[in-house]
Every structure is written in C-alpha cells, then in structure tokens.
Image 1 (tube, one colour):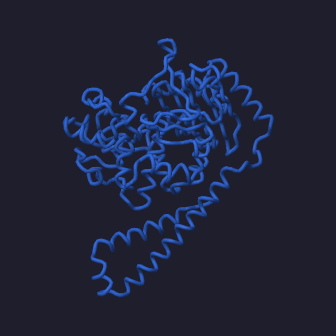
Image 2: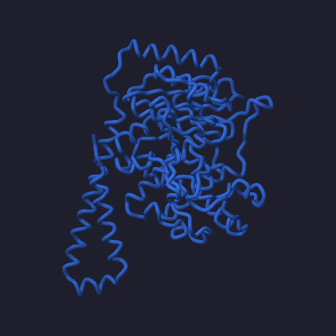
Length: 421
C-alpha cells in the first residue's frame, strides 16, 4: 500500500518555510543571514524532489487501483449476489446504474433503462454520466481536507479570514464541513433576489448574504442543520485559497490524478455534454427537469460522474489517497457541538450504526436524480446507485443491505433521503 503521508507533511513544512521567508524582504535576509540562502536553495531542491516523488506515487497508485486483481470471492457468491440484486431492481423498475463491490472486487454492475427518457435509443451504459446531487459533497469535503493538510488553513480558522466580505465572523471552516454553521438556505436568496439573466456564481452568494443581512438560524456550533449553503461557501473557500476556479481545482488536483476521467463540475452555461443523462420527474408525464438559477452554484451539488469513477474514488479513499489516514479518519468522525453532544455527520458523509454495522454514506436528490454512495467499513463493501427518474431508491438500498448482511434488520434502518439534496 502506498502512503503519501510523510511526503505531504514534508512538502507542507517546506511551503511554510518559504511562505515565512516571503514575509521579510528577501535581499535583507540573505545578506544579513547568509546561511538562509543555502537553506532556501536546499529547500527548493528538496521540494522539487518531493514533487517528482508525488508524481511517481500517483502513477503507482493508479496502476495499483485500476488494474484488475484476482477475484477474492468464489463465483457462486458473485452469482448469488447478482441474481438477487437483479430481482430487487426488477421489482422496483429501476432506471440507472448500480455497482456493488467488496474488498475491491466488483460483485455486481448493472445498467438499466434510458439516459434520456425522450430518446428510446439512449440506453444507460458504463459511460453514462449522472448528476450526483449531494453525494458530491464528499468531493468538496476531501478537497478541503487536502488544502488543510497542505498547510493553507486549519479547520477552526474563521471563514472570514479567507473570503473577503464574508458577513459572519464567528463561522469556522469546521462549521461549514459539519453543517453546524447556522447559515440560511441560499436558494431562498436566489429565488427572491437574483434578478440577472445569467447564472449566479458562488462568489455572488457573499454579496447577497451581506446585502440582505440574513441572520443565522442559530449560533455556530450550537446544533446541526443540513446546509447546502455551507458547502457552497466551502467551494468558494477552495477557489480563494488555491487561486483556481473550483472546477479546475477539482479536475487537476483530484479527478485527473485518480483517473476519474468522467467526473467534473457541471456548468449550466456549457451543458452540451456527451454521454450525459437527464433527470426526469415521474410526475407531469415524465417531464425533464431543466436547469434553473440554483445550478449556477456548486460544491453542494453540481458534480457529474459514473458508477465506475465512484468506485475508483472509493478505492482511492480506502488506500488513503489523496489525503492521509489521519485526515480520512477525521472526515468520517462525528461532529461535536458546543455542548459536547455528537452529531451523526462528518465531512461530507452521514454516519450511523445499525445492527452493529457502521454506515458511512450520503444520498442525493436534485432535478430528477436520486443517488446513493454507501460504505460498510466492517465488510469493506461499497454500494453505488445512480438514478435519473426521481424514484425513491431508499427501499432498494435497504433490500441490498439485507442481502449483503445476513443478520441485518431492516426495521432498524430508515434513511430520510427526501430531506437531502
């Protein structure tokens, strides 16, 4: 297993040295303290060496993750899973993509129905792109962890220190990650106050919140309230700190290095995308759900991907790339409120225990898309479900849970996925 932890920490340390040196006039430092010139040169050489080492590690990681390994489970078990999941999907008329893997081996992979219900020839396949809705929050969260581990900020830093004119001085980065900020829903602001013909950007939210002086629903850290606004501001934070557009940062720093070539941040201004699926509502005669002003905001949603790319993502995270083992452990640890009470949410994942099994998961619901990413760490199982017909797929996941976990009791498990988007 490849470990990038030590390399990343050394790079972060050297970057802090260089950043500190930049604060003082360089020529004065060098002439007054000549040994610093040698230190700076050595640091530069080491930094280049580490960067080259990183490239090699990424290459090796991709080779390790994406080359077929020898099957770990007997064919009889794979057939059993396949036959029974087929029955479950047929029972509920599923349209979309399903992938189930255990110990890195794909046990079940299925593509049913149409990517575009208006086109009877547009069959869903392994390259079909689905809007992930809130399942994409984990991408935004992991990108935030990456920047923290590179030394750009700490989780308990105030957001206002990094986003100019951010009107809430007591909200921290951790509050945004954990949904404990108290921020109101940005969709209300856009619905009532966005009058321009263009789609809004995440940066527009800052001025809207400041201009209309929206109070917080509660003081930061007091309680948990699921917040799309928090993740929209996290995307803006990533832009400000990295000095890159959010879509470019995600592509260059996450998706390309991990071989996720079919994953990207969607822009409604450039929606002519090959292999995309379209979200439909089963009401109103299966009408397509079109983009609206909310689609200009990303980070809380706005990612398109495939089931295969999400499997690559899962494999990368379980091998502690692109973040450290410690960073991953914190991302899937429960948030703690000001009063010490724990909340069943980490950084971009919901957390719960049912029948002595831990579940690390997220559901998504947006514009006709329903999605599930669910990991069961004790069994090293991942379940990925992508649907574009607005079907309630919670019942499908519960049936799959019972199939994979023979001692699983459905009566103890209920996911209110209609509250997530």
